[in-house]
Image 1 (cartoon, rainbow, N blue to C red):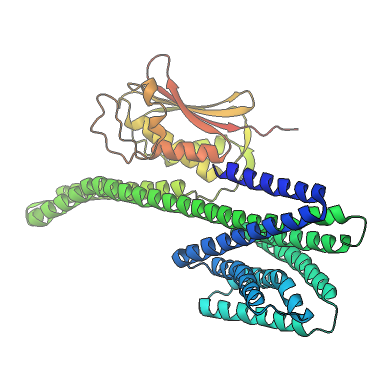
Image 2: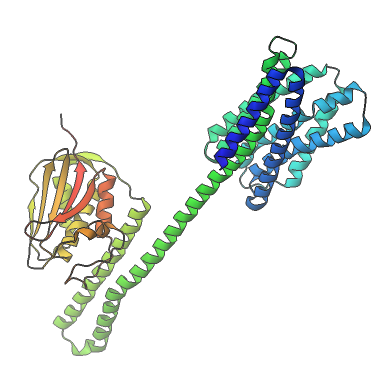
Length: 480
């Protein structure tokens, strides 16, 4: 609907321009009157919209633009009313009336020039509406006095004002574009003023020449500039609202994620913390009756539960960093065997058998530390969900233009409908027979995140003889 309204406005202005060109002087007068009224209405709309938005957002840019657009309308209406009531005959007063629109646009331009510098005045007092209104009113008064008392012909002052609008509009556009982001709509508003300035200048120059039709055509850009200002303010606010909404949604997701993490941490920490407390209490109450071997056994149990608690904390910390995208990757071309074996060394294998086939020399652009972490997470996941008397196979092989690190277990496998879900954060799904296994549900999420940071991926598939194959794929670095 908004696009349709914009197109309709453009068509209406174009039709009025054509009428003015084809109908001669009377048509031009009619066109100027209609477009002038349309432009005033659009400037008034821009002022009301921006000032209402300012009352809610307290955005200095909206205050400056709203007061500037209001200056165009109020100034022209005030002087036109005085002209009608007083019916002056002096040329000076007629000059003031003719200069009214340009004076309002010059004030609007001045306000736009202030938008970007004011944005950078952090730590200072906020911009007061009374200050902006007073400064704008003072500017209008100075311009009116100048137009009424100047010794120069009015045409010269008129042309000078249009040149200022042209140069100032381009300046606003360049300065705003340089800052980018939320200042894009200010740049577009500056462009609209520059277009009005050059078109009005051409119109004035064409009045006494053979290009009178060009002057009439360009006169319609007053309405185009006003309409553009409205459109740019509305679009700019919508874009800013969209960015704010996305930031709010992201913040909501983060808070929900933190709440979920807090719940999981409380659940996973409660087990080892409760065990440590129970063991320590038993040791304290029975200390005198126990011999050294029994005391050492209790201490060993406390150490084991402490290590379990530390692993939960490390896993949660790594999961948070992975989710936030704050892991620092330094990619270096190197052989994969070292990081794969390091991942095996870091894994809590215990007495389980892990059969390794990493003899193939494959090189890739990797961060050795984080790739080893991905391998460790995958191995510990395989150990957790497979029988304790079965081996784990770890191998590295080439598959086309990629290297694949495969971790095979002989557990119950993963159903096809769960093969993507197991890579999600805090996945609590457990295969049949392993429902009581503890874990944060972050292992495979971390593995896939690290693989994708290497422009690769991690997937799971069935092992032909039963079990699961976790495949970590990274692109190979071609050797010359």
